[in-house]
Each structure stands twice: as C-alpha cells, then as structure tokens.
Image (tube, rainbow over all chains, first blue to last red; front, side, top):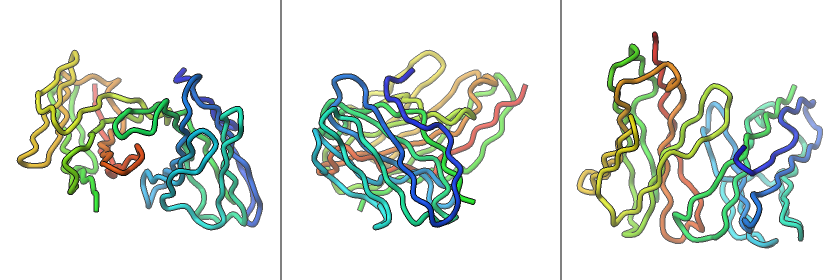
Length: 114
Length: 115
C-alpha cells in the first residue's frame, strides 16, 4: 500500500456524462498531482495542487477540472466525457513542491467511456 | 523543451538473461532529476530510483543497476539475471527546474521475461 488512496478503482460511464475521481494523499503530503495514462498519449501530467492551491497545469482539457480541499484530498472532475477520455488516471502526492523530491503514486482509477 | 525517449518499445528475454533498458533525455536545465518507474500488469506505478543531475555515480540495488551518463544524456537501467516477475512496463522520467516536481515520462518499454 503506497499510502495514496484513489477511488473508485474502476469506473464505466457513457459518453456525455460527468464523473469525479477522488484522491487521498499520503499522510503529511501537501502536494497532489494528477496524471492520465492512455494508449496513444502515454503518461501525461494534468494538474498539480499544493496545500489547496493550483500550482501547475499540464495537458488538461477544459472539460476537466480539479480541486484540493482543506483536508488535502483532491478530486478530478471530468465532464462531457468522450470515448477518448478512457484511460488510467493516477494521483500522486509529495510532501514538497521541490523538483526531484519524488512522490508516490496511487493505484489509479481506470475510466472506461462507452 | 524537455523530453524523454525510450526507443525500445518491447523487449523479450528468457529468464536469467541480462537486459538493458535505454533512456535518453533532453533538457536545458543544469539541475534536474531522473527517475525509473515499474508498472506491472496490475497497473500500479512502482518507484525504482531517483538520480539528480550532479550525481553521476552508477547505482546497484540487488539485480538492478543504473548507468547515468550526462555526456550522452542517458540513464540506462540494467536487470541482471532477469526473472519472470520482472515482466512489466518500465518508464523513465525527468523532472527539471521550474517544473514544480512534475514528471515528463517516456513512452515506456514493455519487458517480457519468459521462463
């Protein structure tokens, strides 16, 4: 157990729908990162939060949004889902923002859009 | 721009063979970190190693070893005496200055170790 908890583990939904993925960081970690792993794009950074504030954005679609709550858990909201959004979504957490500090990944949420 | 290239898409070896996974990176940063992660069939990402740009010492951990060469911008990973349990996708990743810790991943190398 990495200490980073992601729920749900699997999610199947229809096109056009909206889903919320949840991440609880490792105890003591203030920074949360979201990554998407798809067959065509590989592993891509989506967005990062540190202590409740958005700190960096990667290749995140406008249909996607995220937030980090006061208890430090984070949610990734995906709306108007398309078939191409089917992917494995990882959350990672780190105690610090500093480059190279290293972080721990959760086990991922596998999203299937049908 | 930062980039990580893992030219080997798939490698297949027989148990007990040694295998080297290549990783070439591009960055203009003088300070950066390199990582290797393992993704077994179960899907989770398992951290293997982190190396900073100022430490070119090779590292060995059991059957795993890493060779970092700044001159060729490479950070290769060797598994000695491979085992079936080593079958997984291996990712090399880069984190540079100003990245706020975000990782740039290579496309991964799928390693199949056959008994």
